[in-house]
Image 1: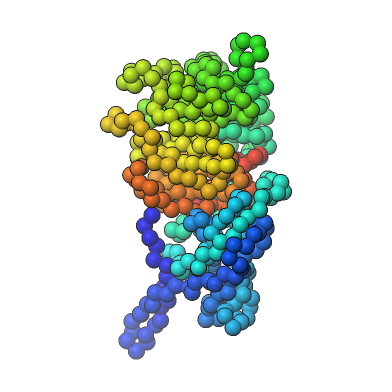
Image 2: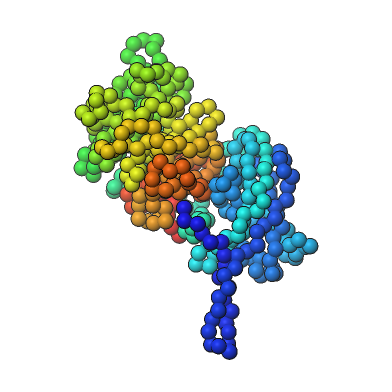
Length: 458
């Protein structure tokens, strides 16, 4: 991330000289209250003292909070109208935080053609108790402004469709249709933004008590109309546990047909399954499924696989589809064209990681760099490669259900670099975010427990 010089541009007209001189100035750094190591529920408001020349200047200030170095704008910030001995008393709503220890920092900023932000405050360490059911439930939200990013991009969020039932994956076709997989086996299409999803599913995958887990569109979808799905289905032998299967369908006039099972009985599934499938620009498939306690050196679970469109192993891979083997419960794969790497969200117990696995003819298969994520309940990732939001290009987006936000990770183009900055988008704006995808036109689509939304520039 290119550092942003935190400052505000103040101009004074020098009448005698007939010129304009400009002083570049930032807001003073906030001074947060609170006790070091304090235990909180996360429902409290955070308070701070803010210095300003007066109430009119104070009204131009906005505030950012950094939680473990991840930035988001403070919601519902209010300040007193008169100053006290150490400044104006202000407070704002804390963002959602998972249970455990966190470091909080505050900054004040103004907008004047750019974001001019103060240095961060002294770190404040807090311990968050477990979230309650009401804190993680869905929220009602409406279309409208969705904040301004740290690099000055104003965002808007729009409701695309309601009425979904436990969505597990989504993809956007070149013609603008949104395909949504639901856990019980339905694949629904949203034909026009602002409308309702089709009540008649385009396909009903026979999961027979299992789960529909992942969905991807062929990179040449406009020509092939291929749709790939991963689901958990009972094994053929009576009494066996459900297994993961990869199937391909052909979409015709909104209906999925010509089912072909490409990979059958990858691994036994115990409880909630974990799987992801994505397509590469050359039409090959990236597939990963969870171990469910059955991973082994000779098995395919817990590994990233690269397959041909028909499910066979590419010839240059020496007879094995395995690219790397380091995963426990993969929740999402995102192909990164610029870095020739696959980003994989993986959950292991209460921890989650984001890993970059380089893949290419000149890159030997290997495990790439991994980042520990602050939120455990992450399920989906996407790499921004569109033109609608140029500042986002090559950024990695991660959906956080528990954290109730979308994480924007600004990673250097070198996939092996361990340096990144994180920013939280839509913090508490739409509730928990389960899924994220980037459309061909550059809009960012996401899904909550029952709603599909879209992020565009404002």
